[in-house]
Amino acid sequence: MPLKELRPGTPDELAAALREAATRDRHIAIEGASSKIRMGGPRRAANVVIGTTALNRLLLYEPEDLTISVEAGMRYADLKRILAENRQMVPLDPPFAETATIGGILATNGSGPRRRLYGSARDLVIGMKFATLEGKIVQSGGMVVKNVAGLDMAKLMIGSFGTLAAIATVNFKLTPMPALERSFLLPFGTAAEAVAARDRILSSVLQPSAIDILSKWDSPLGRATASLETAGFTWNHLLAVQAGGNAAVVARYESEMRELGADCTVLEGEAQAGFWRSVGEFAARKNGCIVRVSCRLAQVRDVLESTSVPLLARAGSGVCYAAFDEPAAAFAWMEDADRKGYKAIMESAPESDKDSTNLWPSPGPGFETMTRVKQMFDPNRLLNRDRLYHRI
Image (cartoon, rainbow, N blue to C red; front, side, top):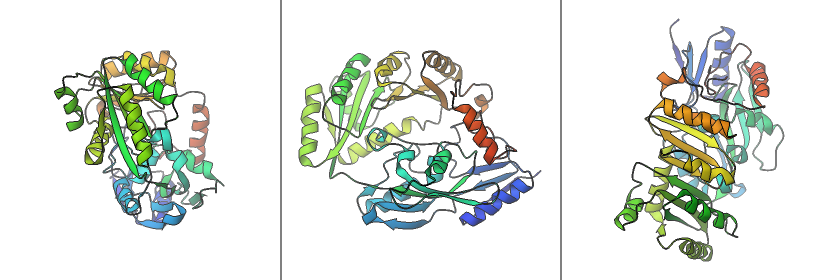
């Protein structure tokens, strides 16, 4: 049967397209900008492809109330620019930030280094409308930060890879940008030293927005890390800390960071922005595989020491990403992490390897509930088949 491609321009058109395809028992693929096609499970052949990029409007923006409502096809980069005019933000910092749509970010539960302080999408979304296969528009939450009525329905959509319904509109609570921001890079020879420095930060009164450890990276991060190498320090582990606040707070951070390491490099302005863009690109690599492991903070050192491949550790939250050239090596490390009790998943891989790889070894006790929810929303399994890591 020939492939049919649709680009609905309104939430009602989106719901109608879903209903028509489901009524005809057609397999359906939902997509945004297709920036994350390497993530999740394989892309199965579909009779109907429904794109959301025409759903890209700003619906309501209340700067004084710190709320905004946008359609799911809006790019995160465009949302970021709109909010910057009032020095406000939705601090998700997701991979593929320049091209990804809001709906795609939420469907994959994308987040970045500042998740430690500001939370994930589930913490920032206060309302949502999504279209079901029955052709209905379901509203969850609203435009008031304290309004949590029905919000759990929206949380089901976040991280579902579009296997339940199609996100149409999203309401966010906003955060003011800090008056000043600085980032501090501290090079260390061993994982133990880097983690010890992180522990000192976590036990202090300081609350940085990001604490990352970069381990054995095989590509430069622009002028920031090049200057470290020029200074004669070859780093195996780089502790990267981002902090914001008024001038006095930022000065306190700089003093504390220099006490942790005399080789501390301070970044601001475009140098800082460029560094974190490079860090964000790590999880968006176009080659090889990325394995994501979630562990306790006390286990981050073990994760860092367990492999010789480049690794990014969100050292303040316990989420780690390791980059492998070969799927076999990635799978072996993922199995070892799973045996240790970490939550391991193949975050991204070449399409040709997804069917032969166990992308999600241990979904956990909540998986049974997830399958029941899938049955409620999509009993005939028509929508984004296998996109949830080959499990749903």
